[in-house]
Image (cartoon, rainbow, N blue to C red):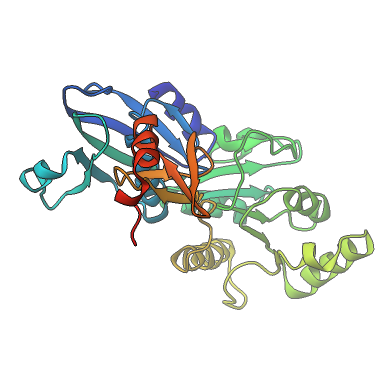
Length: 315
C-alpha cells in the first residue's frame, strides 16, 4: 500500500491512506492493515468488512474535500461513549461483527503545480519563486540547453507534457517571448489544467489569440486563456512579472480554484436492520417492500428484514 501511495503521489492523484491503529477481536482487520481510497471512491487494499468499508470510504472522501485527517472508532453502540474523545469520530458497528476498530484516515492532495514554457529571465524568476512556495515546477523548453537554467533538473527539452500529471491543480504559463507562443498554447489547451496564462504585453497577447482563432480554435477554448497573465502592475521587470503571476495564482487558490477534482459522492442508503451505511451501486443485497427499495450490508440483515419487515419499517 505504501508503494501504491508513492505511485499515486508521483502521478498527482488525490487519495486517502487508511490505517488500522487499534482493533478488538473478532475483527477482520489487524493493527497496521492499510488501504487506499481514491477520489472516485475506488478502494485498493483492505478497509474492513462489508459493514465497515462504506463508512470508511465516505469519511475518506470527506477528508479529501476538506484536507483534514480523521480518526474513526467503529464499535458496538454501548461502547462508543467510553471511547469517544475530541479527536475521534465514533460510528456504531451494529452489524453481525462483534469486533471494533480504530482507523486513521490521512488525505494526500497534490501540491500546486506550475508548468512554464520558455527560456527567459521571467521563466527563471517564476521557477525560483514558485519553488519557494513549495509548488511542483516543470520548465518546458523547445530544445534549448537545460544547463542554462538555474534548475536544469526541472527542464524538459520538448513540448511533450506526458507523465506530468497535469490536472485542475496545475497552472500552465507560456513565457516564450514570441518564439513559439502558439505551439506552446496549443499543447497547453490539450490538457485539463486549471489555469492557462501567457506572459505578454496586451498587444501581443491579443495578436496571439487572434492567430489561434484563425487557426480554428473556438471561443470556449480561447476563453480558458488569461492573456496577459498575472495582476496588472504596469511596466515592471522580470522578477516583478513573476510576482504578479504568482500573486494571481495564489489568489485563485485561496478562492477555491487550482484544486484537485471534485470527489465522488456515491449514492448511499442505510441498512434498515443494522443501521450501517451501504453504497447503492455496490450493494449485493437488495429487496423491494411495498414499492420501496431497501439495501443491506450482509445476507443476515436481508434475511432478518424479509422475515419481519414490519419490525424495521417505520409505520
